[in-house]
Length: 239
Image (tube, rainbow, N blue to C red; front, side, top):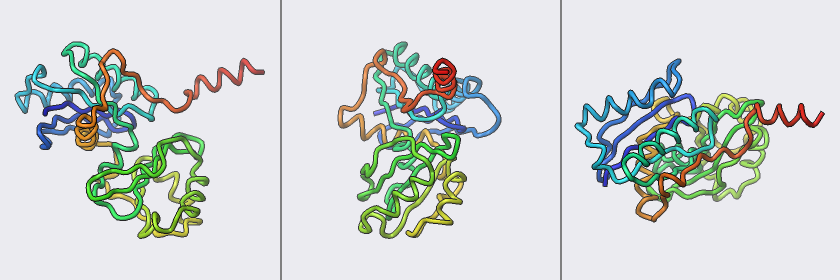
């Protein structure tokens, strides 16, 4: 099985090619570029380096959301365009589950957090049984303070031996954790702390085997909440 994986849900743009459980190539950039400038050139670069015949792939995996509204649209449009052009299905990987898959075999809870502004984060809570990812709490937007309160109230059997945070929302959560979190916690190291198309692709392979994919024309990103512009417009019209 061979797939192309894409993640442009946050600040990182990441593209990977995986075949039969092997990561053939991954290209990630987290530096002052818009994803519309980087995603397709990155794909072309690794396709050239791996001599990839795009018609030979079985599916396209994409971090489907939540995340940056613009980033999700770019990633989804790229995945959908490839899927339609090649006649291949889309594997929709929840962004936060894909992030959690950076840390397989982790003990305790894995807690990816993405900055959702105004002291809120997009978050899901996961744990691993070996390499198998289990969802404890599905992805949602939540205030950082409420997340810490929720972790403190969880079953001690789940929170032992603690929790690992990762993602660009870590800086939002960190002061609340230092002040109020009663269970042991740590933050993932730099090379595992952000979105990775390789992790998205590895999880996507598991989802594909379970029949969890859609036709390209059916794919749509997962936003979870309205954009800031839509919220401001509703408030203005409400007044």
